[in-house]
Amino acid sequence: MLDGRLILITYTGRRTGKRHTLPVQYARSKDELIVFAGYHWHKKWWRSLLEQSTINVRYHGNWFEASARAYNGDVGAIVPAFPDYLRRFPESARVRGLTLDSQGNIADQRKLEEAARDAVMVRIGILGPEGQRRGPGPDGKTPD
Image (cartoon, rainbow, N blue to C red; front, side, top):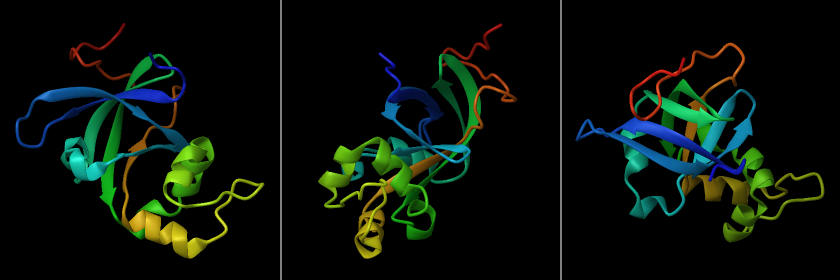
């Protein structure tokens, strides 16, 4: 199922306290993984991450503990990482009315900022397998 475009994230619901696991598309931006909540007005999962939260991420076949935070329309937080996501998923740029140039950059900064105002991005602080503490999977057990 995880074809290199998806990761699994496990988070704790803010109201129920229940653990939930879901697959999400991601892109790497510097030392973070970034996820955009598509059709965020219909979805609620990202609201559990409006405060800095500890989650578990299945990334490159291993579970890792990571920190995550959702940004809703925060241009300052979203714009720097947005192009990395759009280069990885150019169809997402087209849906938002953005055009990538031959180097994969967004030429119209104003349009990029407008798109960011209507986006929810989750920034996941995971540096990758080396040096990261392995975390528990969705069952709460830490792998050997």
